[in-house]
Image (cartoon, rainbow, N blue to C red; front, side):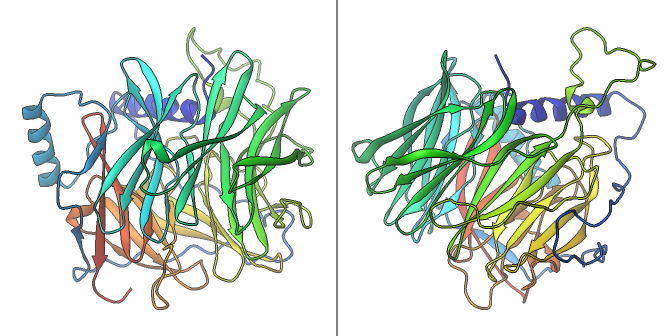
Length: 470
């Protein structure tokens, strides 16, 4: 089976954790070395480390809005007695349960005016099935909707709100390759309301990532393709009402120094922002270096430098201007977060993994792209943690509320940071006992759509958090 890059990264992180557990050598890394000014920027500020976050405010608190038993996906891998004992212990020590093998894999969640939604892939009797989860913003009701069986190592469904319903994009694999299928569902979000739409073929099999976004009248899908051994990004337009494809796919010019993959789309005024990872060539192996043991997978350590590029698009998905590289030379990026900002710009958050993937580090990098094409960069000190911090915007933000939130999980539990109006300034960290073991997925109207790992299952609920000034 061909693994997606996301699966490779997950497997490597697990290997790092095992090595850390049986080694006397610390697995914590030093802060990543900083590169120069990102290439291609019209203007950029110097990278200045933010001050350490202030202590969490005790006046800030969260409450559960899901009154009945939360919706759960996946099969419990433990007895009820053992599961309850571990839940009680987790609440006592303030730590969440570690993710178990074969647990449900989730995509990116979204929020509409009334509902949260996320796509997932779960295992049922040795088969993989795609599913959509819907939870009302007030916590009830919650329901799931099956999209059907999927084959191969494919990404979970993407979702985006459209009018009073939802549009989803699901990948599947067969002997011919990977395809992407559009689905539409309207209230009451039941199987009878599910519609199948157009299918996109020719998707790259060995690279992760596809993205879905909808404007007022048209939708856009971004995905990676492979042509003559070179990876690039393609765009397909579709009619969100008819769920039919519009015209032929548009292939963007391939980067000159690597393969493009992992595209991410966000809507902006007058079009979209599209960002992707450029994966450089693997450096030649030093003849003096020892060869890896049989069965040892060191591909992630041997990969070349990577970069993030961003491109503004118009409403039809046509590029406006040239791609802009936002990461310094020599960076290694495995994943990133992309968010449209209130000033018609974009925010990109990533971690530079040049010292090795999977290692805990205290800093994360943020790039604020302005509407005029200028950029500002900054390093955030978040405390020791691994993975890319989540960047979440309130889909129905009140005027006085933060422009977005950053969530970072570490040894001390989950912490939330409010972003200032410039997109670069972090407020004090917020913590609450109800956030222990929680992974925030989306937010709207001050309510948080969250998931928890429970012995192989995923549980979904809604939290409301409020308190002292942010």
